Image (cartoon, rainbow, N blue to C red; front, side, top):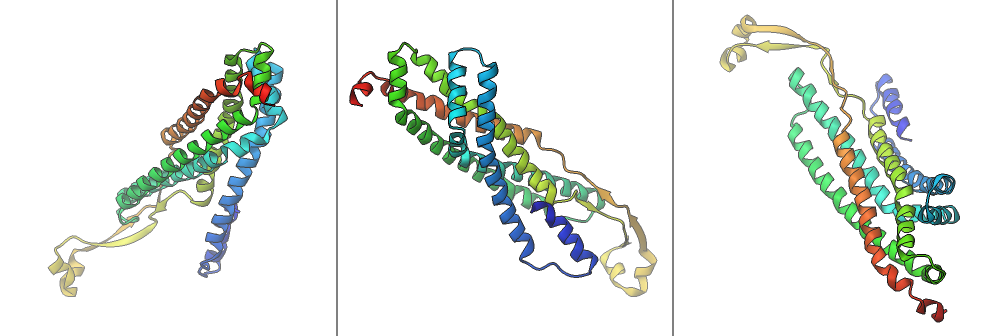
Amino acid sequence: MFAAIRPLLLWYERRGAVAPDWPVPTLLVVGGLTAMIGVVSGTGWISYRTGRLLHRHGRGPAALLAARRLAADPWAGSRTFAALLAALIFGAGAAGLRADFQAEAEVTRRTGSGMADPGFYLGAMDLVDLAVLVAMAIAGGGLLVAVVEGITSRRRAYAAQVATGVPRATIGQSLLWAALAPAVPAIGLALTVGYLLVRGVMPAPSNGGFTRTICDAGSELCGDPATAARYTRTEWVPKTTVPPDVPWDQLAWLAAGGLAAVLCTVVAGLLFLRTATSVEELRAG
């Protein structure tokens, strides 16, 4: 849907017509929601394939336990990471939009025309980045609740493993494996999709390719038709295109923040592991 926006605008432009107000916003909203659903749903496939790879190449009991868990319930990752991945898609799109504004500001600097106030748009993007951080913090809280709920719901199975001699440290390491192994590729996918959505919609900023009239005298002489022609000259402004830079630093910070959120919430959830693996849990059943 995002790929159809630019051809749609070009089609209206070639016909000399003005595009209606509804097609582009509709495609943006529906396409963005579809992309988010696709990434979240794809996390289930990523979890399953990660579990298969860990089962084949993993070393140690923790990796093997995580592999069995991922292969048995691959959709747990998509349910757990849904809010975080949505925030990362939005954050990557905001990073791409910021890069586009910076490129537009450079075009304005080179040609002397274009964006009226680049600083206003870049300042607005600071607020968007703040909103993304808040959304990631909220998603981290939801992730913590999901981790604790997962440990609590499996407390009898964990207690049985401890009773048969499996160390609690091994169970904790398996939980880290099960969380981080699918999270790394899922976060990379979310950032890639979010950035490419913006790049697919917005062409590289360009301006120029026209002539402009410049009067080198003061406003009094230039405003008088009798004297303006004497000081007026015509200048050709060459066409300038500035491709936006890939915001690697901002994308890296988003990836680090996403991984830190996953790691911190899983480590915090492990504080409940000792209680959940108590032998009394077997007697309670």
